[in-house]
Length: 453
Image (cartoon, rainbow, N blue to C red; front, side, top):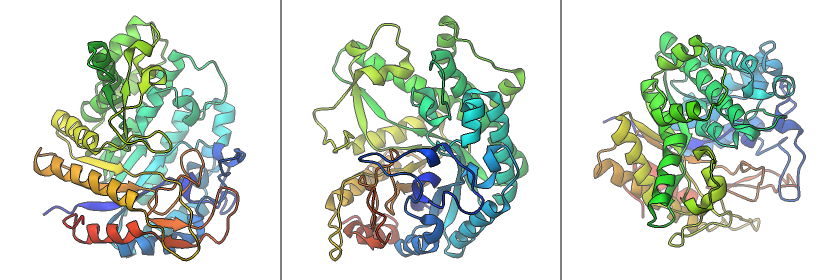
């Protein structure tokens, strides 16, 4: 029987800390100021100093995979300078500590934290110079780690670079945020992914796949316009990328949109050839929630990439978190099916979880039955996709299962089964404290998903 991967996913800026240690240069996150409800990014959960303790928890849980991000700024000075050997040694120790615990490492190369120098000088991924710097960085990391790290992704949630979120996560600091620029960023990022995927396949025996943030979207009503808007969102934000990851070809609908709207893109023959050659060993995604789309709220001439900015509505039949995320395990099953039945490549959900505001009294473990219910329902939905629908799922990774900063820098939005004793503005002692869900998840993993009680 093929090994099923149970594990945890994180990013460097939300987890590591050590922002000015070990020869690390600055990223765009390192200069962001804290707000009333957000932390700075300097300490995170201090995994830089605590990773062996955290890995002991993962090992005790029975996990056999840990997806982490290599910080570009930590290993390459300013993103395009000299290799920082001390940064590589940190990740050497991290990878070796995982392997010693029989935990398979998975590397992500980029999770929104553009080296500050590249953002300020070139405006991030809208510029080809940054593509060159990223490809150089990626090849260095592949050469250094692929003998020990057999699972890879390039960009976390790559379809976000096809939405207006791209201007926040691509190192873009100035400009008019035009649709042509958005599509240029999306193209440049896909070229970078393809270049690294092709290089890894040509030079190693490791596996690599593309990754999406899969937000399941339904029509808000039975109006066919709502259904078509939901379909267009899938086509432009999901299937277009999955087509490239699987076949090396963009969606015909997306190519027609670019032509019909006269978008100005700089695309070279070399980039086209690189993208055409790309292959994926698996298709991965994050899944947290679903939403609905009301086509009547979308202004005329809006690109499908931006429909959700105008037409998103809450689903009245689903439970909604404090942050407006709607719990929908059946949507998870549907996404697993939509990917596998269309592309017939192994599917790998590598982020899933629920963020909740929690406080520890200093003595009693947090009784987070809501987190148990969330993960149980999603694991059951995944198991139904495997057993009843024939979907080839290779693993299930939770997100931030040792508390980390949220994507907005909010330590109050906690995903973990292990509490980290700090707040947004008080680092306290960073003590790790298992929650009730920890012991439930340990039982689930050690039974390989058979015991969900």
